[in-house]
Structures are given as structure tokens and as C-alpha cells.
Image (cartoon, rainbow, N blue to C red):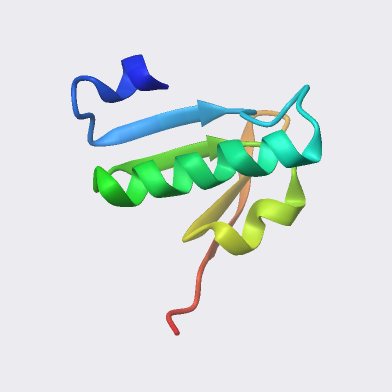
Length: 77
């Protein structure tokens, strides 16, 4: 992730960042991703199967068999 951020990207793509991690370490990785997204003003595309992460997102795009099936955008508070 550090290497990806070296060039100050406008978009960061993170695929399954918590796979093979226990819940504590996975939570730390997600906190890091969220912090870096804010600090670097970077759009982050998070690819995951973990539904508990949905509340952390601005929008969700669902793929089924390679086809975009749904899109949900967060409601502004």
C-alpha cells in the first residue's frame, strides 16, 4: 500500500485487504485505508465480499457473474 501511495494517486484500488487476517488485524487495515483515503484525498475502490463494510462506503456497486447488477449511494447526513 505504501508503494501505491508514493505517487500520490487519485484512485487507490484495494482488493480483499482483510482476507486471511483475523478480525483485529483486518480492522486495523481498514482503519489505515480509511485514514489514508482522507489524508491523501484519494478515491478508494474497495473490492470485498465482507458485507459488514458497507456502512463505511459512499457507494456500493454489486457485480454478479461479471455484470453490474445494483448500485447504492450513501445518503448524506
